[in-house]
Amino acid sequence: MAIRNIREIGEEVLTKKAREVTEMTPRIRELIEDMLETMYEANGVGLAAPQVGVLKRIVVIDVTGEDPHILINPRIVETSGEQTGQEGCLSVPGKSGQVTRPNYVKAVALDVNMKETELEGTELLARAICHEVDHLDGHLYVEKVEGPLQDVSADDDEEE
Ligand code: NI
Image 1 (cartoon, rainbow, N blue to C red):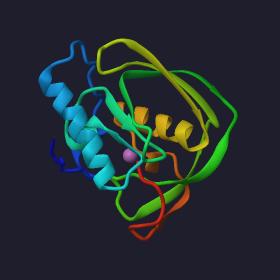
Image 2: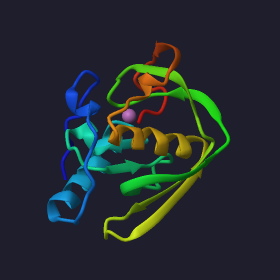
Image 3: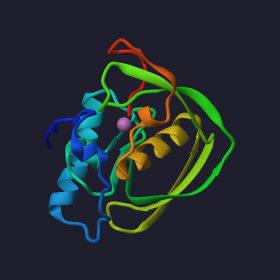
């Protein structure tokens, strides 16, 4: 496993639509392991493959630090409610901003064995799912931010 370099806002790879994964390979397994390690090392709660420079539809999410989720080709199939709160992103270091998201989200995806799986969550998990799926379509939360971006200290706040 290895820590990968996290791409930052301004880099073109973060604005592109990622491609579907059609088969699991040793290389993709390694990418997923590296994404988890990179996310934990950066104290993030989520990371999408484009953030490490790979245009594949893969995200990892762990909002508690002990409950990793791996979603391949995720699709949001259900949302409800609304939450407004501070959001950050590992690709936009040192900043946060207010974003409104659904309070409940259900996604379908493939797991590491390319079997269909589901992930549903509320609050931070719902927010993270939306945020990471946005990355796969080349979108950053700063496009949705309400009001100005704020400076945050490095060890505050969850980042995705
Ligand atoms: Ni992000």
